[in-house]
Image (tube, rainbow, N blue to C red):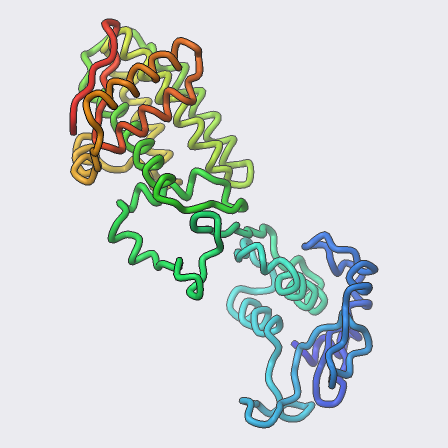
Length: 349
């Protein structure tokens, strides 16, 4: 690749190293949205570098004493970080990749430089779709071994049910940062229990001749597909699932019956959701039992009744967000609410 870029006039050799000439590629900066003039103003050349321009980046670095090296037309040296990735992807996947992922911190300079050298050599689009993820913080701080707040997925799954963790991560858009906390996991657990409780209610409801759920299910499927087409907007998809759950519970509260057609439609919608997002694929009754066994109670009867009354007032005021938060909080603590025309009752898991 280095020889090819030199032959095309996009790279040059200097004292045993090879550099990419950024000024020779007018499209440089298109991925990160950076302006070349602005980048030049903030760039600098390290001591000992023979670059023609501060923005030029290394494709091949001349070796230093004690470093690993390979023989090359320019002497002993090693490949640069950016060219390694382009060489591997081009060799194994071809000139154009459908999807290329990575953290948001890699957009510049790494992915910008990958794009420049790959497209400069092949004259073809390097990546059709870039997927850059945000980062998980812990209690507002970046995960770091030095801060002592670092944990592995294996360690986390020893404490958190896998589907709860998945729902927590899906609740934010993948490009956005997300803050991990015990409170956030409790909220995700409550939300997951709410979804499975709704499905369990549908499964155990009496038979009805009226397809009352059809509009809500059709609306959810359309909204879910639109959210997925909108840069994998899982946060919107989960919000749509909450809306479907609310609509379904409301209908079941007024008449605890579901038609065979609605059961089949809801099952198909949930199957679609599960195949794409990997949630709600377990048997509702069994999953609820799993979630309840891991629940932490720690609430007195008076505290439970206070929260139920607060939820009732929130519903009267049409503050459904707060009402759902209270239900999720109680569910996560092993308290199951039963709404009916006669009022709200509760039971311990």
